[in-house]
Length: 241
Image 1 (cartoon, rainbow, N blue to C red):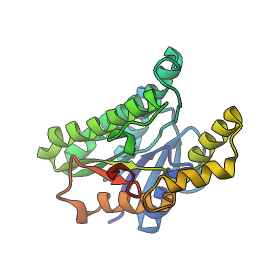
Image 2 (spheres, rainbow, N blue to C red):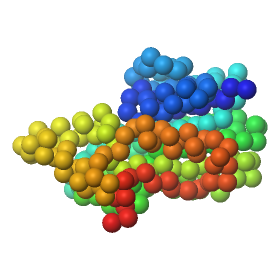
Image 3 (cartoon, rainbow, N blue to C red):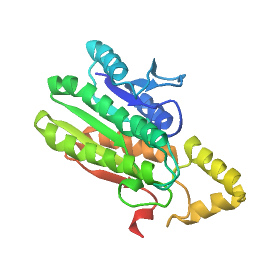
Image 4 (cartoon, rainbow, N blue to C red):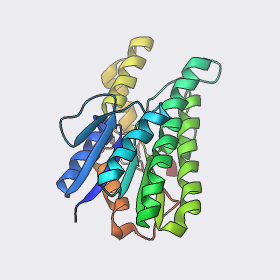
């Protein structure tokens, strides 16, 4: 029987790699994103609109099981607390945290009825450690770790598992945008910054989206059926320093 995965933010970066891997492993994949995807079942969705998320997931659940939810939609923002405006703070939380809240809440009735499900939230190594000039982003990712842990406890009785993946520095379009923005603002040499970022990792390189996708596939599978409430770090050793 084909299993169904719902992912938010699956049109690029880590989300796209997850979609590709899950499709290759015979999942039916629904992608909720503002940007269209050419693979999977695309549903135009603004994750900051809880009703929009709820209606789309209700539509999917009417004709499919929802075996896996991967809450992946997110944005990055650099700035310390003084350099973060009310509007910027709200936007980070609306997408990164409220979007996850809406998606998790929407899939739970179907998963409870099925008496099974795997929920995966895309957090960050910043759920575990602080980074400079990352006030709002860091706070949002710590919130996702909390959602994973509380949901794991509240819904274990229904055989629903919830975990958070905590990637380190992964070479995605989001990463490249952040580096380009920094170099444009600071005047730094972009090649030197890429090398510095790689050397910050004990393994001496950046992570790849495909590696995060493999971890997501494992957490979604029966091989991980005794894993819930965990923060799964995939950061090349960064947080062990």
